[in-house]
Image (tube, rainbow, N blue to C red):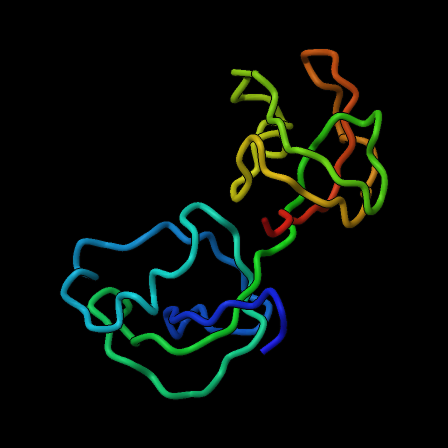
Length: 151
């Protein structure tokens, strides 16, 4: 197994290489399952990408109708809008979402991307370009693809 990959169980419908998902945590029904530790070993509210489906063997599951199977996952890169001043490829930043309540703003989801939290240490993988619209708070933003750094 490659470094940075985690082995877990996910629903067979999601078990396709390249598929991305956000781990939302365990259901109450999971407490009854003997495989719960293998399914719930991911961090809640993080975005993951399936890198490899280990085998076609399915395991019964109380939640997933078609069962679960073994996969290798990594944390997926996330596209986000960040302050543009020090934004360049391979730079390391501490993610700080803006203190903005403009939920109807076109940039809101980019400024508050699912899978990242304030204080996360990240590395910028690619600078995609300028944000498609101006920030209502006057900040100069760039769209970037970044990944959370392992601690």
